[in-house]
Structures are given as C-alpha cells and as structure tokens.
Length: 379
Image (cartoon, rainbow, N blue to C red; front, top):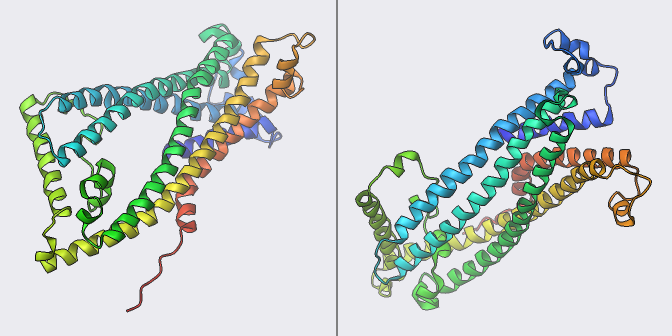
C-alpha cells in the first residue's frame, strides 16, 4: 500500500509540473529551495516541486530495486533450489503425491518467472536513479551521463516494461479462466451431495481444487519465499517437513473421498455441509477473481499508454530532424511536432501512473461494493 501511495504522490506532482499548475506559488520558486539546499549552477535551479518529486523518485529507486532483487533471490533462485530438492524426494504413487507434485511444478514455474520478472523490476528501479538526477538538474551536466544517460535509463525502463505488460495480459486471462473453474467446481460439489467419490473422485481433485476444499485454503510451506535460515537446513530436516506435508494431504484426501461415509451419519452430514459451504464460497470468490481480471486489464491499458507516451520522448531525442521524417515516424507521433509529442507523451505517462495507484488503493473496496449480496436463508 505504501508503494501505491508514494506512486500517487510522485506522479501526481509530475502532472502538476507538466500542466504548470500553481505557477505563482512557492512550488516553482528555486529560491525557496535554496534556503535548505545550496549548490552551484545548475543545481540551484531545483524548485520545491522538483525536490518533492525527487524524494518520490528516490523512494522508487530504493524500494523497486530491492523488490526486484528479492524476487530474483528469495522468490526465484532460492525457491527454485528448494523446489528442485523437494522434487528429488521419493514419493509413492497416490493421489496425495500427485497433488503435491502438481503444486511443486507450479511453484517451480513461478520461481522461474520471479527471476525473470525480478530482473526487469530491478532494472526499472535502478533507472529511477537517473530520474532523481534529472529532478536535481544533474543531467544538465556531464555527471551520470548527462541527458544521454537519462535517455538510456528511460530506454532501459521501456524495455523492462515490455515483459511486465505481457504478464499483465497472461495474469488477466488466467484470472478469467480460474473464475470459470471455480464456478464449475462449485457445481460439481453441489451435485456430489457430500460424496465426492460419486462425481469423479480422484479425477476432480488436483492441487488447485484441493486448495479450495481445505478450510482456510492450502498453503504448503514451499509456497513462500525462502529465508536465508532455511538454506542452512539439512536434507533430513527438509525430508521430514516434506513427508509431514504429504501425510497431511493424504489424510485430508482420504476423508474427502471416503466411500463408506454413509456409515457415519454425523460425519456424512458434516462433510455435506462443508462441501456446500465451499461451493457457496467458490461462487462468491469467483466474482472477485473475475473483477480482479478486469482490473488487470486496466493495469495493462494504463501501463501500455504510459509505455507509449514515454517512448515518444525517447524517439524524438534520437530522431531530431523534424524536416525529414518518415511517414511511419510521423504516424507514431500522431502528426505532432517533436516538442508537442514529447510533452503529450510524458503527460500521458505521468497521468496513467497517477490513475493506477488510485485504482490499486480503491479497487478492493469497489469490488466488495459491486459483489452481489448473499441471500439470507429463511428457516
């Protein structure tokens, strides 16, 4: 949440700068900053507004870079090492083992994705250093590469954003598909009347559906990021923890698929009520997951507009000659002049990255408000 708040603060101020709002206020007066921040030419030109923007950019430089490194190390490399170790442990041929294997395969794929995403996130974070320098007018000198260094940093950010845009589309499609699976599985649970063995049994239970059937959800210890302490644990300790988790899954699966459940009327009733409650919860959660899919589409659209807008600033830097422009390049700029394309593109990016944190902060309450109210059953 803090990252979204700072993003809103930073890009909101950028929009104020783009639109030159409050131009007669102290925000635009370099002398107001000079009382606290004294430096030579051109650094003394830093206004309070630019100083405030630089603080938000420095926060992004630190936090985004650290987030990327954590994705690479803890959620990526270390987690992949742990999953590889667990996958090497011998398991007997059973439904529980199948569920565990599916979970491990999924987490292995997630760990590989975390490494790739982490590299891109860290690249974006590091590039913020040049944005901080630009706010302090450092890029007007030859320090940190000057203006060309800033353009290179923006180019790195643009390239790193492309895979993230792709994953936004992938995640949105995944959420829609998951919502459908949740509704379909809820229908199976209602049809079962408390007897999963009668509606496919082992065929309908996998790692995903098992996590829905377990009260409170299934979160095996290998889902989480890996701490440095765990990396020091030996194979015996890991094998013991792994066997304990598999045994827990076996016990739960045996209870869910018990064929002689009718022999114990009380247990049968408890299971039937539990499965019906799970079905209701899945139908309820499916709506939330579907809305989160639409939200992910919005993130894609907002970030694509930002990507395209900031790209225009890079293009007009490299293609300076406005007189001899290729038709396709003019089309990319929508026929605008270099200066207009640079301004409109930069503002579009700043505006989209101002709207995005508002959606991040407000969407949970909005989705909850949109969710259909449950009907209260009358006796």
